[in-house]
Amino acid sequence: MNDTPVVSTIVEGGVATVTFSRPPVNAVDRAAYGAIRDAFREFTDRTDVKVVIFTATGDRAFMAGADVKEQHRLAVEGPGSLPVSDRLDRGRLVRDSLWSLRDCPVPVIVAMNGPAIGAGLAYVAMADIVVAAEGTTLAATEIDVGMLGATAHMSRLVGPFRTRELFYTASHVSVDELAARGTVSRVVPRQQLLAAANEIAAEIAQKSPLAIRLAKESMNRTEGLALEDAYRLEQDYTNRLRQFEDSAEAQRAFVEKTEPDWKWI
Image (cartoon, rainbow, N blue to C red; front, side, top):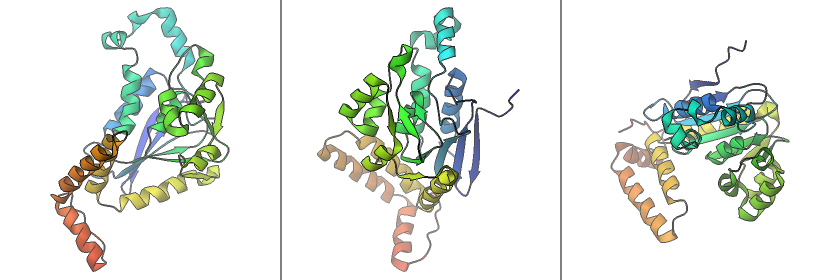
């Protein structure tokens, strides 16, 4: 019997590493969706966490999509086996889990240790930054198992026209192609994956934690807006940040060429 938790979290130096583990291929069932959601929601008020790395165990997949066996079982059993809220909205749990990364108050770095398929691709698309092991791929193969979904997430990664080709054919796209598009930040040998993710995370963790949180919220809200509306909203967030003492501390440290002393106020 495997006693490894589905989701585990370790915090060190302001960096939280969230590890997903559901051997053999890290397929996602309902319990896993909930565990991922709960793990990321815990960071809302934690001042010891400034950035999160999301990765997985094994080398067969970062995440191999939804657990098809569970989907089939639920189809046979019918909706009566689900909580009432899920009977009314079958996709709620999945959405809540995905949005927990996007709504996480601090930046999320996905470290892809293997292929990301279906739901795995969707989680990758919710990241702020993506690093990947050499030779890994992403795919939305739902059409091969009687389902749809993840095309909106795939469009964030490769654009609308490439998304249609990849989804209709259930084909894989390489992380090298995504790196060329600027979607994947770094492609490194597998043994260097976490080191690369931690290098980026450590740099972010040195910044003003209040500024980083407001920056993420601002970017989430401005994405997709017209330029005029987006910049006005960013100005509003700048003015919010200026009300905190840490904003003045950042300016003092810059002028005096010293290390800032963040106080979260």
